[in-house]
Length: 373
Image (tube, rainbow, N blue to C red; front, side, top):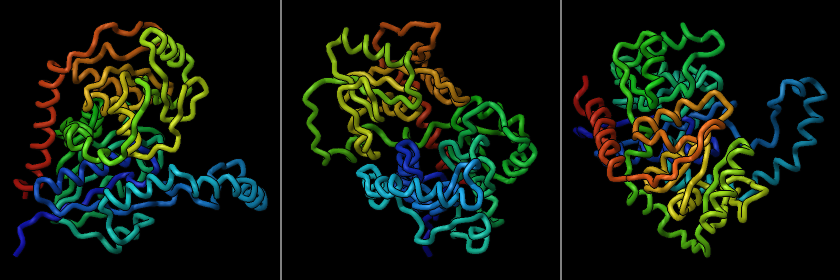
């Protein structure tokens, strides 16, 4: 009889977001590295379905006749998006690197009716418990479908904010209390979990830190990109004028080009069709990384890059602040009221803290998989 532990994870894995894809890959890859049979539950509810030809996400247009006119107007743009290089690169990454269940689940009821079997279930990582979004209000991401007798745990789940929204406090509290083990990604998440009645929440690192830089480099070794110039990589979700001004000054002082992951009017080159692998390659080869992205920050640390982080206007800054504070890199945060640090990052001191946190994170997983009931 096989003693190999069968593990299923559930996360927002197929949302055409670079960080979401890479964290989903990292957790199952690490679980396989320690000898588990690991799969991602292929849970794609309607609210997480992207690149649909039809559909109406705008309440203002979601009315009879008006909805059909809206869909018709959007159709050419949506056809082009479905044919884009970006979608193809994400789909290729998912097919090659994400071990998903053969069955696709669209609803919580479908999961309960045909539960994908496992000894251990992990909910996480990333913003699965962010109640600003539908996934934070979805019982599936709190493993409510997992049968009695199985082990139910979270790994590096993130609330992304410091409170529960829309009056969901009682419901989220009840869901969390059904879990055997709770780990979150931010220290603010530990405090919030305790407030919601979880006795011993643990802070662990995002799954991308479970793999080292050599393992990540192995994924992009076949891309054969050859950037002609040294560059600053920009990953700016908000088209921040403050970030733009800073990057232009940094580029001028260091005689560097400016590359961007997203469309950018002031950059020398934009790579808006990047998939997860192209993103990794751009980070690895950058002289500086300037972003307001959590995973751009995480991979800058993994690849030991010189980087700067800008605050977001959205209420999700806690995740960036937490990771920088954890590694004593607070001086990399730039706000309207503070200037950039002129000091280079000393990764020797950072690595010591990072290694300790990685060991703690791996021990948490190993204890659940191999030592628990």
